[in-house]
Amino acid sequence: MLCRVAALSLAASCAFAANQIGHIEFFGYKGINPEAVRRALPFKPGDPVTAQIKQQARAAVKDATGRDATDVAIVCCEDDGGQTIFIGLAGESYHPFAYNPAPAGAARVSPQLNEIMRRLDKAMVAAVRKGGDAAREDDSRGYALSNDRATRALELSLHDYATKHEDELLSVLESSSDENHRQIAAQSIGYGTQTPRQIEALVRAARDPSDGVRNDATRAIGVLLRSDLEYAKKIPLVTFVQMMNSGIWTDRNKASSVLEPMSRSREPQVLEQIRTGVLDSLIEMARWKTNHAIFARYILARVAGISEDQMARYLTGPLDLILNRLHPPE
Image 1 (cartoon, rainbow, N blue to C red):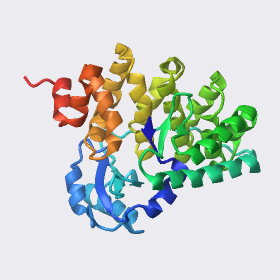
Image 2: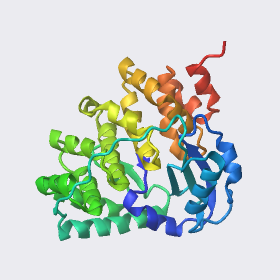
Image 3: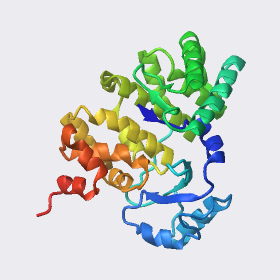
Image 4: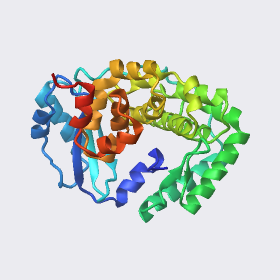
């Protein structure tokens, strides 16, 4: 069971979070000194989150590195309600992630589904506000069900709709020119019946040109994998290895939620693809001081050969414990 703030709820939930910076984290920085960028920033942890932060961060990155930032994301919420600024740098651990062409069709989701999603979004925000276990979820059915009663009821309504309107949802996700409708379709398809069509559509949508569509499609794949690792046989690992090196924070965050369950198999070819494809990106992510580092730490520990019964010590201890197993000192 995992705690979540859905992408559609993010902006609203941040509205009631403490309006201050909790952490400033970097990614994609191999070959670049992130501390030089940190020193160039005109804000620091504890400062208020302002409308100018993204622009200020991009200007500081350009001044410090001579390159544009690949992303500046403001993400809530930490345990104390603070917000984290994630800044993407165009270093050697960044590689552009290839997107599909933008669709140009007229397909749209129905008013009925729009209303379900509007109410679900509102309920998710309320669940996050309650704190505690309200926003935790059960992924065992292959789609997320919240502990919060009102949210769960709407998620079950979404599941019922999705199972009865698969063709409509697949058409919108594949062809709609409206990225908001594609995003609703992606989230809804994740609540549908687990079929080859569903998985193929979600994997394709993981390369959608819209950050939000990729986020919700990839999140749905992670939920499927956490419910049953047999789905890993139908999901191309390479897509999410490549996504882990993206310059967009949501790509890296959600790609790690797919690679984490896939690494549980400990199949040598899976761990080797991860080691050779995304080791630098995983180490950068594992250094973060927020709970967004946890999937990267799990993956790194498995690549390093740390057993599941020893995992807790390595997840909560200094990262060097894992790195020394990856690269034993001579």
